[in-house]
Length: 227
Image 1 (tube, rainbow, N blue to C red):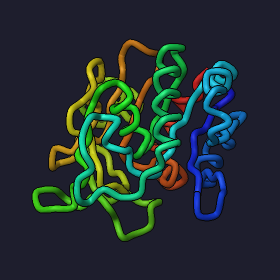
Image 2: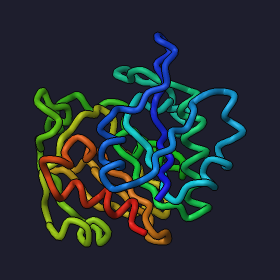
Image 3: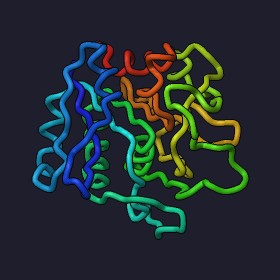
């Protein structure tokens, strides 16, 4: 299976990057990995790249600019990459239209929600929430999530799992057409999906860091590249 990966761009060093753990888990499943060249020059090539791949992976990264969900920036919002926002929102919509198998991770689930009209809470680092940013090795789980939806129940065969956590933004209003697949004990939405596609799933945690230690997280990637 060919997997198109949307990574990040470090403007300070003028470098396109994809964290190696994403690549390692895909290569372990014999997937052919294609990294999208995040560039103004590539904006007109998004559909062409998507056409060539069966699966799409959206990686973690910067905050999504609130203008894409019709809000003003609030205190607590962090680094933004407008070019990445524009490219990934379009790519998400095209991937849906073409019924590609999609897994969206951390920032990815937020892009998925925003691309279809959902909104985000810009910063949850305040009272009322459990900790969602761990100061420990990302290979290991940090807090529990309750599995609510049939897609993840079929994959994990559990009602509760342990996940890692590295985020300060979360889904606020779920986009129309999506169903909640998992929630944290504080009510934070941890996973969503579309049931009108073969596999169109977003998760708030980072399974690419956990897959060697936790066989359940590996199952997500196996499902992504399922032939």
